[in-house]
Image 1 (cartoon, rainbow, N blue to C red):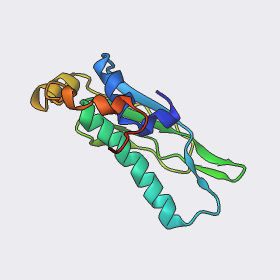
Image 2: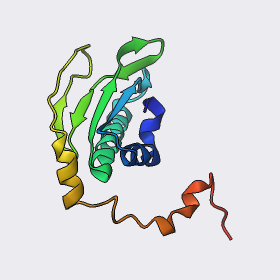
Image 3: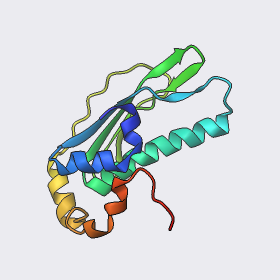
Image 4: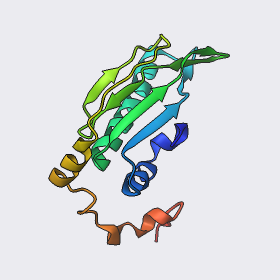
Length: 139
């Protein structure tokens, strides 16, 4: 999965259900240079939260890799990280430095997590038909 896919829980779910051992999101995301710092912090927090949510909801490690630096009017916020199936951040890279980091992960946690939090088993697929439509009509 790449960049924009990271905002959709359906993409993470179907990838995990197809047998992925981990989710990797290579990303180029940031903010406009003139944007205020409070909004920047909120956007970064939202990005990190959705990635951690994918890990928890799907019982899978997530590797969120983000570009850093400036191009044109955009500052890419870096801050790449890895989290385990419980959403715990295992490593967090700086926002402003280009770095390579190798993080050891325990893939056996996926099976452990899915036994103890059986979200796949307990899904109520009979109530999800509306998700196949782009918009739901109000009747």
